[in-house]
Image (cartoon, rainbow over all chains, first blue to last red; front, side):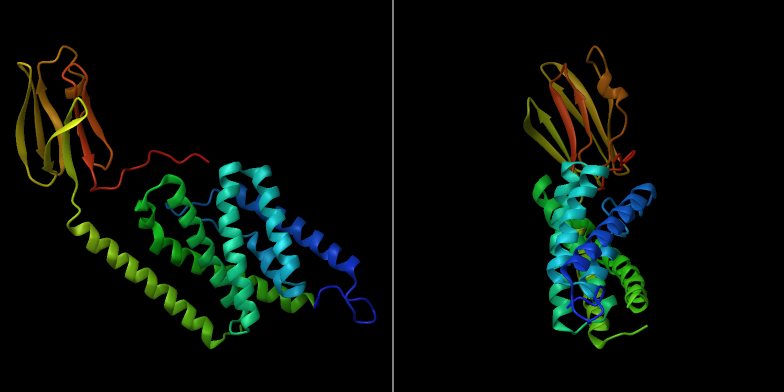
Length: 172
Length: 123
C-alpha cells in the first residue's frame, strides 16, 4: 500500500505511484552523481557510502516492494552507464539485487526498524559484491576484505537508515 | 530514534562474524609466511622462506646469480650476466613481486606473505 501518494479518497492512484517512482529514481541518480563527486576512500577498494540506497529504502517504505525493486534496478543501470562502466554495473547489480532481496525480506518480517532493514541491506550489499569479485578474479584472497566490508556495510547502512527514518516520518 | 530488539541482534551478529573472519585471517596467515620461489625456464628449482636470512649461489651453465634473503626481502646481490638488470631490480618483499634475469633464464618470485602495496587506484 502506497502511503506516499494517495488521492483525496485515500486510495492509491497508479499515476501518482508512477510519479513517485520517477521522483525517487531521479533522487537516486542525483545521489549517485553526488557520490561520484566525493573522493571518498577508506583505503579499502569497494567501500562506498551507498547514498543512492537511500532512495531505495524510502521507496520500499513509502511505495512498495515491487516498485522499489524497479527503482533499484533502473538506477543501477542508469548510474552505471552515466558514471561507471560495464564492470561497475556487474558489481552494482550483484550488490543491489542481493541487498534488495534481504531488505525486502527483513521489512516484510516486521522484525526490524528502518535502521535495521537498512543495515541488513548494507551488509548484504557488500557481501554480494565481494562474492562477485571473488568469482571475477577467481581467487579467494579478496575474502581478506570481508571483515572490514561487513563493518563498513553496517555503518553505511546505519547512516542511510537514520536518514530514511527521518524522511519517512516527515513525508507522510 | 526507534530501535527494535532484532536490530541489536543483527548488529551483534554482524560484528561477531567480522571478528570470526578477522581471527581466521590472522590464524591462517600464521603458517602462511611468504616463500621465495626460484624458477629456471619456468620450472621451480628452489624455494626458501622469506623470513630466514640466507645467501644462495644460483649457478647456470657456468654463470651465477647470488640471491640474498634478508629481513623479509629478497634481492640479487651479484651476477655475471651482461646487463645486470636483475641486480638493479632491487628488493622484493610483497606477494607477486619478482626479480627476473633473462640471460640466465631465472625468475625469483615471492608467493604469499605481505600484501602488495598499491601505488594508486584508478576508477
